[in-house]
Image 1 (spheres, each protein chain N blue to C red):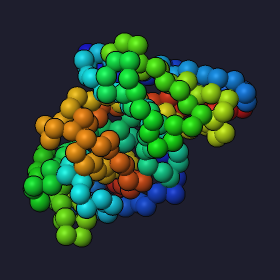
Image 2: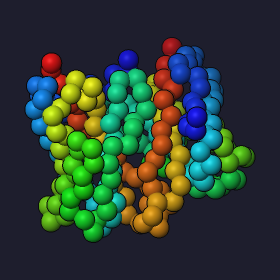
Image 3: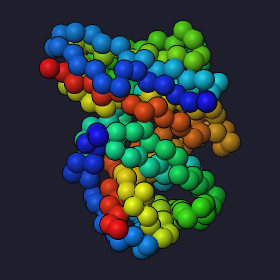
Length: 111
Length: 117
């Protein structure tokens, strides 16, 4: 597969644990945020998004938290499974700008 | 099924050659994008197009060229001027997000891996 995970921050968890992946974003004026999951050798897949008028949004087994005061975004994955192992990217944008991606975090889930 | 198709998945190039990566989408999206991904780094925007016959440079456009003659197609040419072209290239498309901006959720292809020999 593709070596997109080299030199990335890595989070290692046991199957069944809850995972929290953090992201510090750069632009205090950003109004839209999104999390992507990228498995080895594949393109990124949408997980969940959130707008700046919210501080929390829940999906299936995932929750995104937004703290605009400290420009921090987090992705919480409940009951982590081996299939959740991947690189996770946050991205931000403001208005008509294009998305700006973070460097990513590798999540490793042990059975 | 609707989606984005990139080809080829793997491509080898000799130094000094131009190569073209194909990207086709049948999602009827207006906007299309090309990103470059290097190990340990995030996605960096090369070019994007919000409408047919129009495109804009992204953050790392030098050594690349694109065209947008059809809504469903956005090929990327990696020219000999690109000094370090070995990378994983991702194409994406989107429709305007509900926030009113031109980029809502991006839908990605499976990528093309270019290696310069």
